[in-house]
Figure 1 (tube, rainbow, N blue to C red):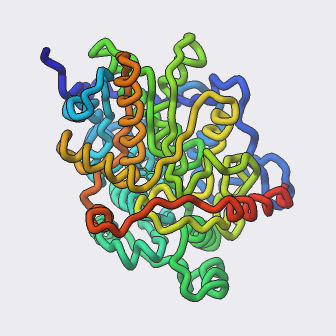
Figure 2: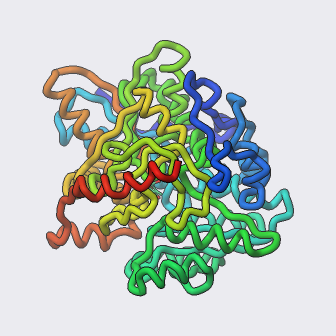
Length: 453
Ligand SMILES: *Cc1c(COP(=O)(O)O)cnc(C)c1O
């Protein structure tokens, strides 16, 4: 039997609006709080930090938000992205399941991050903002923001977590090629960075710490705003283009997913692939399962606590109602840099609390084993982050085989791993191991949170 390998949409079939799941949630996400007053955060309080257009999206309850034409035109550089039948992987697993993946690795920066970087740069540009600050872990978000800012003539400062800056320099070179300034974090440029260095002069940095620095830099300079690559509602909104396209593509082949899987850092690509389908669970009686795949070494969804917490390490951001390991959680140095974040977005957290989505932690060795099998059967080397989704997709396909059932699996390939080959090298040379966070460490971190509320 012939199978269609790649399901493509033409340019004019690309969605013209993003989907906002808040409109359809029975239990709305709890409000963010002003960390000083502990009162619900007002949009105006976010405006010194974020472009107004993005703040508006952060709070909107409209079901659809139109994609501005200038953003839509730039999306066309790499969108619509292909939906691919993983027929090679299916064959290797000898499974009755049909496995599809949405290939977000085809973007010029190699990941889904550009889907939000372009609109974030755009909304800053139209308000007359000149300078942008941001942070980056492994460098994917910084790379995306670098080219997005260049498209709109904005300059960009990226605070890059020190361990990646030193050990994985290639995305630093990518950012520099696109014209951004890249600063190793913690740095001496900001009070936050200096405080972190005082605490630990040999600090290898963390995403939360780099966020503190980028936020401070934006607050203390004129015509400057901050941007964030995950967690917040407006970022998740932008990423729904992934699932909206996938829905049309599944429709073309006459399939509908029984299970949708995304890897989970702060929740943007998982939400992007899931929410347009979850809409049909909420509104049309569908019963698709949604699984967020997180690393066992940073298990906020499966072992964290639902509490108000800061988005950064120093405590400068609004307080977000989220599943969290505590804002000063220091994740082990696993290779999936993009998944080393202590918390989850407020929408995803509410959905998890209400049992509308599921989460699963995966060990590092299993993720690389899955990534290598995927590379050898589908020809694409996945980002270490994306291998978490692949590992869970494989588990689901093997379950289908055991049960002798047909099952339709859809996962998001959030990025390729061609700039992460040192991680594969570590895997092949046996330097990687599994890791479970000790229960005491989580307990100690989250016990501090109750005092915040
Ligand atoms: C940043 C990143 C992630 C994790 O971020 P989310 O916001 O959870 O999607 C996953 N995969 C890739 C390739 C990334 O760059």
